[in-house]
Length: 169
Ligand code: FEO
Image 1 (tube, rainbow, N blue to C red):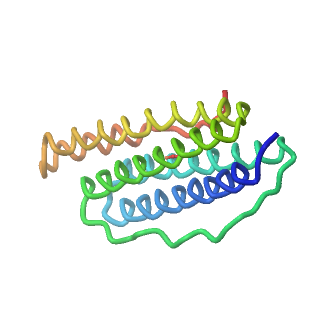
Image 2: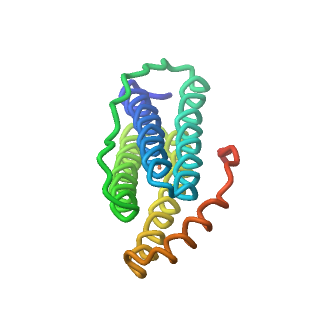
Image 3: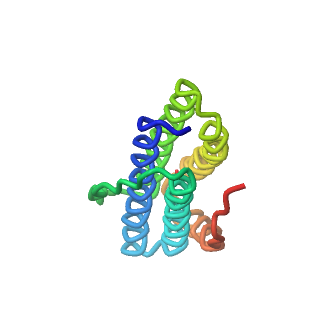
């Protein structure tokens, strides 16, 4: 049995995942404007993954025979100053998303909803990876600071990221 409280917080999480997609798209557009096309690719791929995250919750709510309640998606920030600034914002944002997933995990336990508690495990693992990915890129950006040649090489590396539909498993 899924409670109204759990359905409500899962619907909120759909909104957060789609907001994340918007935020990554805004970042992708920024990188495109400043000619960092690999960074633009990386953030665009991430935006697609965020949409997958939202859709997996959408399907889960329907599978539980509960009601979808889509909310307005906020306008994302567009005031970015550098690649490092963007990735520090990504890291902060992903930590925020992790904390909301933690709340869902705790609430599903409080509500004796073990199916949702089990479902949300995938997101807990996913958040570890997302925070780590952002942190790795921050480390690289800090290592060579404003060195243009290194930024160029990192841009080439990030151009290799390919989108694969994010399957729940
Ligand atoms: Fe879907 Fe980046 O958390």
